Length: 181
Image 1: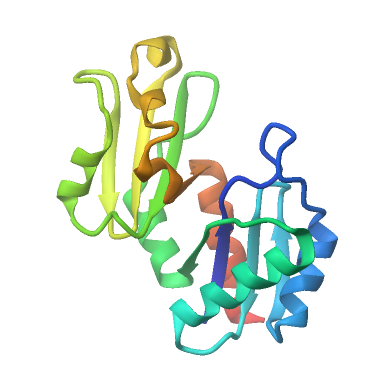
Image 2: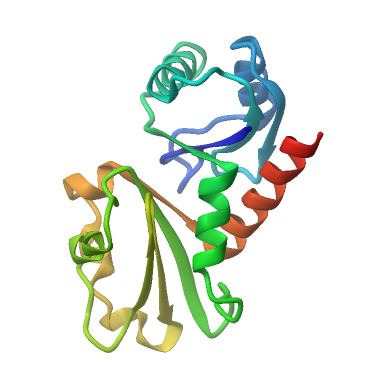
């Protein structure tokens, strides 16, 4: 089964720069197969790595630290987990000029009550839960009223990573291709 490594905080705002070709080499050096990066924000699709996900996550984090000198959080999602995210996303939800639509990934999101961990503003955000992820859509005209920016710097924020919903859909597609190939 394919995995996607979601690396937190690399190539964001000029901080923690990582070259994607070198990152691909790092994953291949770990013996992982079918390695492919997607856009410049720390998404790596691959196969292999064994069944011990915690060990795999530690190996990846250590290799990134060794090769780039960065201590980054690594979240892993397999094809089935990404399919659950995509299935949770209403087809009409998109990250576009009308709405900002993000998927927040965290191992802390274990039940539908996990949505309560987010600082939501009643009547502003729409959310959907799936284990390991919360999808959140905000009208761009109401973004300034959303309290989601209050998450920055919190302990939860440090343990999660976000991708826009368009990227999440593409990562699922790439994981499916890796499974097939």
